[in-house]
Length: 132
Image 1: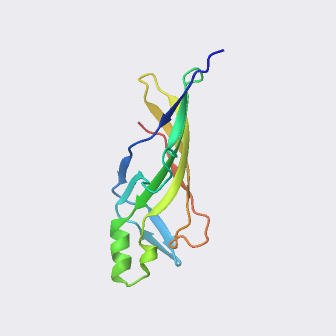
Image 2: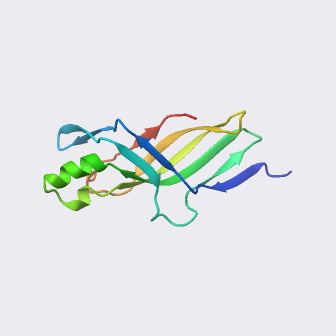
């Protein structure tokens, strides 16, 4: 039987959450301000990839991403915090979903941040809801 799975590499990603997200830090809830999401240029080559299974009409992908929060970073820098707290957060986003009739995808999944001083030892996670 022929394999109906097609492998692909993710080569570009540029997204934003203009309203930001709520962050719990030192017992306070802060809005991150504008959040920018892009592929992590420091991730190993070819590590952002996935498969399309047309027989099952399912797609899955892993994205190595970098989350930048320039407004919050600027505010923290003005307070004189360690610069390690203001650098972008790197994460791996694993998502899956349906292959749509127009060949688009409705992917959703969870993201596991890599070690970052702002997050401390906490178990942070983020979710991405299906969209087009």
